[in-house]
Image (cartoon, rainbow, N blue to C red; front, top):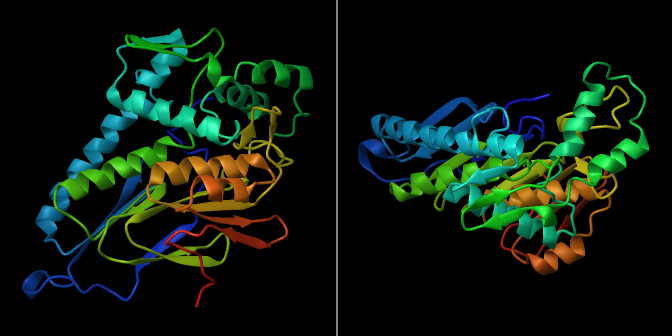
Length: 327
């Protein structure tokens, strides 16, 4: 069972508007705004640019979408010729790209920091579950012995990284679902910033704002909002992709137990970049009962928003950004 990059994770459930409107520049470009909407990374995307003429904005968006295409050729499980697909198919890839090395390094770091809740080697378990319920979503739960066997293949410590390449042990496979969308969002935002832009909002599954304009972000899944400037937001929720009729099996799988998380109905993380927010939101959603105190000590500039199944909302974090109830 294959699918476009990361579409199984979740819908963001975030809408955005400029907080207080635009007040940029002078003359003919004052208050100008360009908005691109389309499909990127297998999902609906949006790029908002303020203060530039339409011709320049269109050119910059074309460059941004070219960057998305380049990175999909590295990280997309949907493309059989992507780097990650070739690695999973053969168990080895020689001379991996710079981006592959960077993202794998970050993924392994977050795996260690989160005690295994974030796991880039979970793909064999996900594939087994997806195949199990593909023909009949009402099928009985998988055999616990088979789950344990697949979970045994999900050990990132068995990934071998050398100067000349990356190797996986037989049966292993990687996925960057839960981090690549944030990484690509950051790459697009950084590309636009290198062109001199500041008042920009990039929404490619995850959301990143460049310095300048403050954006009022409404987080619909939790009934909260946040004013965001020079930061990022990511949301994870089990309802993003449900694969069984009883809704107990979905895309947020904990390889430590071989089962899907039975915890928060949604987790939103605001951080300095979308890659970090993406990974932490995934880890918290997988954890079932998130330990926010540990993460707030490890990441003091990160804000966390957790909505429980009964509707209670918990927030944590002492950074410069904070969640608030809607006006």
